[in-house]
Amino acid sequence: MPRLLYLGCILFVFGCGVEDSAPHLENTDHNSSTQVSADSSDYFEQSIFQNATSPIPYWNRAAWNLRNGRVKEGLQDLDLALDADSTYGPAWSAKADALYLLSQFDPCIDHLDVCLEYAPDHIPCKLRRAEMYIHLKLYEEAFTLINDALKINDQISEAYWMKGTIYKENGELENALSSFQTSVEVNPSFFDGYIALGIAYASISNPLAVDYYNSAISLKPRSVEAKYNLAMYYQELFLNDPAERKTALDKAISLYENIIEIDSLNASASFNQGFIYLEYLGSYTDAEYWFSQAIEVLPYYHQALFNRGLARESLDRKSEALSDYEEALTLKPDYTAAALAKSRVLESMK
Image (spheres, rainbow, N blue to C red):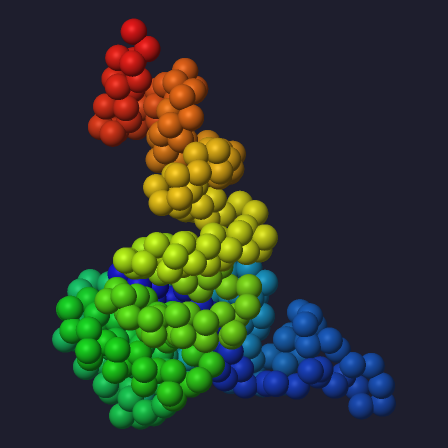
């Protein structure tokens, strides 16, 4: 299914309400002009010392630890926040997020359930729990929580996006499009909403997909995801006119080349270029080059080996093609297409 909110969950939870936004904390000695950097353990120690009975300073330090990859310390601080106030929803929600990233899914769900018990109006907990229901394909339960969140705040772009995801999973494309559209209307900077709209329209070959992918690219000009999806749209676009088809393929190739400039290790972008040259343009030398690039990045890329074999076979370099087919079969012994190609080449070499 499409990507879910947990891909950016911790930043989402902590980015939406860190209580102390001051860039620094004044030293407790008011006769001193010394100030403590907000990005330091001393800053959080002083904050906790000044308000040790509140969950907020512990939660803020947890955010700082988690943002810096100190998950263990972050979890400890969230526990301290909950010790200070067991009904503090943001700490339950953030701890569930951290447990999710540690692949501790059952404890994650348990913490979300406790969060909903102690802080029933905490929107992040509702959305996170709804997301877990979506993972389990329990869509009715997910809808209930999403709609509850929207009753509290009807401007939550992620909630509409999640509803669209459920509709799309159930084959209700019109409702999915409506929900995705609402997600970008309430938040015109909601990248995931534009991606979802692009994917949905691309699935029915609607050219509106291009507009939505371009909107996503305008928000994140170096987004490999948006560029790759747009390239795939052009690559898979069925057009009767050869000139229009060539133009679309050229656009796809240009996007793949741009992706490689951004991410030189993107084997899929190299593979897809090879596939276009092999399957659609009949340029076997170019196809061989791009499949080789993909293999250089991923030596176990058996599909690239097979397709490079096809390109080399088309160039009448049968020994090299045979080597590629054999290597593909070494990596995937049940690769029927490679086995048939190997037999074909062996027969032609007799």
